[in-house]
Length: 321
Image (cartoon, one colour):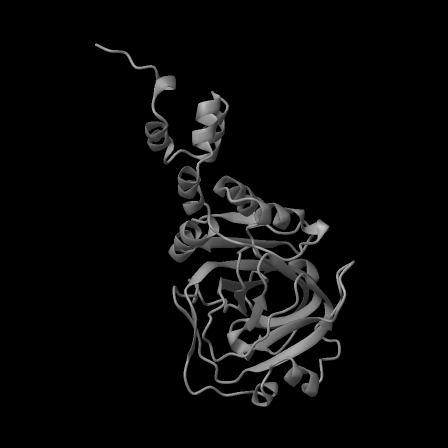
């Protein structure tokens, strides 16, 4: 019988052997030999790892304060298909601030193992930290609450993305976010604020939100960019455990849509959404139709397309009561 040393296996067979290995095992294989290291870094190998990255249960602690936030994220099948289609063959331009070094690495690399490293460290996409809370009108067996919080939305996709953020009812045991997200807008209105300019960047910066009332708030974030809001109010209902659950879903901004929501500025920072709004005339100059400056009623549902990432964030308000 012929004995074949495993170190002499062809690279294609090694790749097939590495498929399905977890991150720790791939790391150990990469340390064996130079040839193994090259195969262990191939995109097709890491695609399998990324595919299982967001599978529930997957919990994390967003903050370490007394009012902590915990969340669960799920990468949808359309996200994995998008990675194979677009991520490995893309052109990303534009300036990325030095403080966003992790986004700069994503701009410069085309290796899926680097994308995995980023998603593993920064995958939450939406981070919310409560600062204060006050009770509002009670609703049946749950308690109404208005929460002032900080919000950071991070778009790590190489395209403009939409993010829908909404409070979930305590009675909901499963997420209401579906594989094909649609907005049933009985009433919606676009608001805008002038944001602070990042250091070294000139020109006016803006933040825009489509307020859908109880159906949530819609944001539009540029590629490889973030939006930070120092103080933002969200309202919802908490159960007996004093927890407010927020759901979010993220997807690629559709090329054809009837929602005239402008894109927020790259890496915009807004002190507070209670500050003065951008006046109506300036919003119209920025491309917002006049009818969207007041509560606007749509007769048909507005499709946003398939989501790439969805999740929930539990805000523990017991320390703020």
